[in-house]
Amino acid sequence: MAKSTVEEIRDVLRREIAEGYRPGDLMPNERELAERFDVSRNTIRETMIHLEALSLIEKTKRGAKVRTPDFGIMFQELTDYFDTSARSFTDVLNFRRINETGAAPLMICHVTPDQLAAIRAANDRMVGALTAAEAAQADYDFHYGLVKAAGNTVLSRMYDVLSVPLKYYLEVGKSQELNTATAKAQHDRIIAALEAHDTAALSAALSDHFQHSGEVLASWLTSREQRSEPITIWPVQRTPHPTQQP
Image (cartoon, rainbow, N blue to C red):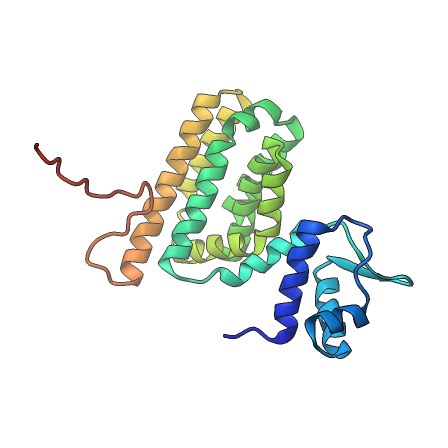
């Protein structure tokens, strides 16, 4: 779908704000922007409303001023690209696996008693959940607690702003097969490794947990799409080319 004039100008200004402006800088006024892009001032006014909605600028008596970026709002636009395809389900699970297993050493170093208690409480809530939505929320809270324990603000922020699609995929999975007992046991193993400050054990527990989740997801996707061969979730395996003899 072709972009509107407002969207095209908005994207140009968004890029320029990111590359050439600092918080507090004033933007050109409406007249200057209208002359530059050869459009009406109403078009520029609508464009500035878009930028303001994205928290990139704020209106002042002196004109539009660049704000400190709100990355949450920016990342929220990513949710438009999530769907119910097998690729999206696979990518979301692997996104979580890569980040959480990779952050295991940080979790060991930075986890606090309060964070451990919150992680354990989320696991208990998952077992007692009465609906798939409640179970998905508790499961998300468990893994979000692990991410918070890593102490990496960028990673925590990513999970925070992607919470809606992440919980959606968890809920879809739980509505198909709750498998709560297995998840609870695997979560307990993760908690035990974290509490013991054992990096190797935590990495292994996380890897096994995501491997199991991948197998469950692959089975469901294969059945949903009526495929003759199971979907490979992790790792991506390719048939090697035969070695040519000289």
